[in-house]
Length: 373
Image (cartoon, rainbow, N blue to C red; front, side, top):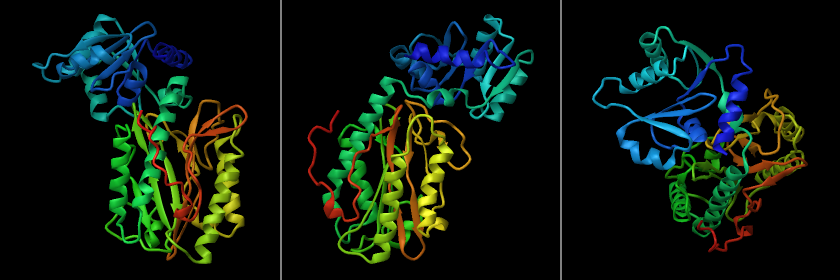
């Protein structure tokens, strides 16, 4: 599959006006995507071969992980050893024109390449690999399903500990522990746990605030399994609550479920965002949905495409995205319901299978023994 990825990359590169004879990859996630190597280094790709430049700390790891690559171990006794190794390689291959990731390569590195290799012509390419990554292959999909399964089952295992007077920090810590215990490398991002009036903090960090009955609680979580991310959010309450909180929960549940029913190959991202936004706006809360509908997920927690009002990307089978409408009402709290989904030809497959209920008592509290991968 990695061979096929490099082939697809060069199919895109040769369409460009510049047509460089080599492409430099500096984004660690893209290096992994094209080689399988998860350590530090840079990757030079040609249509025929790939060259991984790393240092002696990663010699064994590179030999184990890097697929279809010639491995070059830079001389640590040299100043700026990586650039010198790259210069030697480019000279040996007689490369005159090289493409690079404009959204990844540091300006300082770019200037250094220009000064140390003045005859080399550098061409910027924006998101060329990230666009390839939008469509997951069968192996990636299986890893993402496992990541989602670990996250959701770990959440179910955390529910019994969510009691009146427990802190937001304690909930996050327990959920993090459960995910790692169940096979995750680590959490996909700093988990979001907010409650009560803090629920309007869309990316709010968990605090020492204690959970109280009757207030809305948001838990936004996910994990990394074999480099691939999952992302899920649930909102709920302990005990009874007032009618306004129930109302905004019902609106978001309706918007999320009905938008999921709209997902299929051929839909534009902006169409889905507009569909969910219209439901919330017509319910009277349009001013309180202040972020886009969702985003791509994969080697990064946020990647292409963006399910926003200005993203014209057409969904294709194999894309993995989130659907996460929300309402954030000052003085009341917030509600967000999010699932990671796989786009199919005629619809979607939900990877983060969990109940969507307002009362925490309606969640299945059974601890799954088959979660460990």
